[in-house]
Length: 157
Image 1: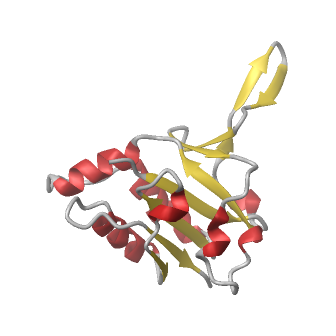
Image 2: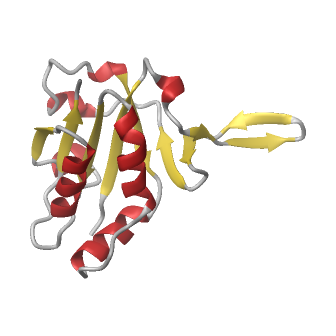
């Protein structure tokens, strides 16, 4: 099953976000990748396209969606997580580490998981999250082969 993951991070604290933009080099010059690519700890990969996502259809008006950058997971690590959850194996991977270590330093964030290429069609519920551990539990349940439901979770301080 295909799993699509988007992470929404606030624009105003962009410098606090520990994502390193990747560049192509040509001689002594550096050029950004198209679409823009970012890595966390030189491993976990995200892309950020300049196309708007229709999240405003799901996210309540009290959350200013235009104040967030949307990073799409460009990595197979979610499938490793899915396999480990469903085969009841130990599940310590870099995406979980990113959520627990990095998102906890950011005052507000969102994370969407969908099982449909048209991401909005694969999201069944909107949830307010208290913390990153609650998000981890929701991801575990969402990618379980027994229930497989997409969601968007938001933490706002």
